[in-house]
Amino acid sequence: MRYPKLREIKEAVRSLFTKPYTTSFPQGKFTPFAGFRGKPVVDEDNCVGCETCANVCPPNAITFEDSKETAIRTTIRDYGQCIYCGQCEEHCITRKGVKLSDEIYDLSCFDIQEVIEKQERELIICANCEAIITTKDHMRYIHEKLGPLAYSSTLNLNILNERLKLAGTGDTSVEVVDELKRKDSFNILCPNCNRQVQVKNLG
View 1 (cartoon, rainbow, N blue to C red):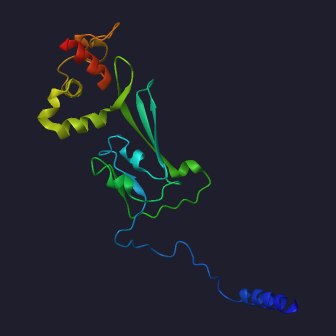
View 2 (cartoon, rainbow, N blue to C red; view 1 turned 90 degrees about the horizontal axis):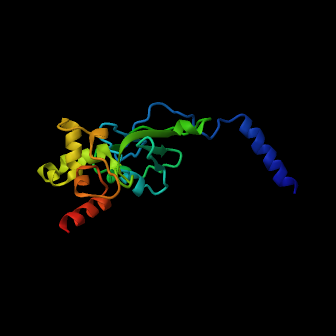
View 3 (cartoon, one colour; view 1 turned 120 degrees about the vertical axis):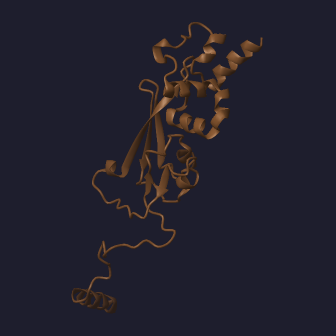
């Protein structure tokens, strides 16, 4: 039993006069290698708030909260849970909304809020049932992607009208009173309510 104790004392004395095995951090400038996956960075001009990234994120580091009262969708990105897999970049519908950078993200902090980022997007809400349709940025992106085909959709026409100001919007739009009628097709409706209007029109 004495030999192991003497060996431990020997190692302890040796460690007093030798350099530590751990390396200093940061150790000079970091040069990322090809294919390095650093912190995901959101491009505010190209992110449309469609939440595709939240649906494909394996550790659920990306979540969102919708508020009907304020008509705002808040996207929450917790980099403390992020595994830097790159799924958000790969599945982004605009291909530019989020990119993995060369940045080494230091998660050492005293406040968890320092590793959380939030983005806000304005929502489109059904005028009849108050269901959340999507964000306005997402609908504009779809409108631009479809081109002339977008004019077949009343919802897209509403988005176009909002941009061109050809007719009144908001309080001046047709009011939904008791049940859906043909005139309500000019309101912003979710797919389910719009289907009810179309069925009535065919009848």
